[in-house]
Length: 307
Image (cartoon, rainbow, N blue to C red):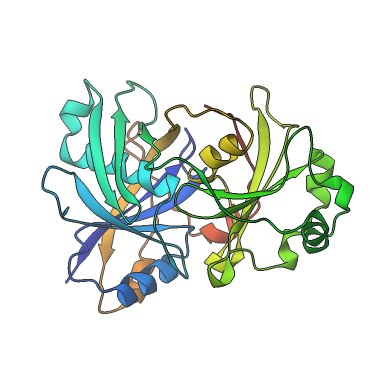
């Protein structure tokens, strides 16, 4: 059986940039092991598998896999899938108005809004399915400093201290004194996220880009993701760690209009290596890029601004 899949670029307005995502449609009949094998073959930060929703009033049910494990919730797969389904199922309507998309994820129903933006990359926002919460006690500053190759005094600024929080997945947030400190950190000394532990989220008040409140990097080698270019599920928790706000949590994440449709053959996962040509909605042409996406993204940095 041949199954269509699409690849998208999320967290960007530009094709072939941002955080790549694979979305496999019509995944009915795929068991957990097969979905994990296909995600490992794609070797992107996350791969989404779409099926019919349990509740018919919702848009779809989705499963999200990194190369080595399933996640109950993740930001860029959520918004990328919402944009894709809106584009595929109601393209004409999306040209004139925003569309509500409800995705059934392991963490619960996630309400998304695919945005109508004439002449711009397709985009969406979603309401975080549950408020960020503290999930465990963090290691001591001394332990974190040793893991990162830093000094104890490098960790923390203002009222920011290490904390483990999440809105579905656990993140070890470590505030650092400066960009220079972040440049000296050695997150590769530990497999963050392995054995069910939290991934690592480093952030500092100093930012590279004007208008950003913080500069951040996320590492999850234990999930098969050495570094994630940007992490939509972590950003709300990071903002929560730095704010006493109890407001409605929303994440605004642009998804570029670059994707291609090809096929997956579950009987042979190698079929997932099919050509990675990508066409934009603003051009009849296309480009082909056979670059190893996971390795390309491992060098990417992400800045975010609290919403």
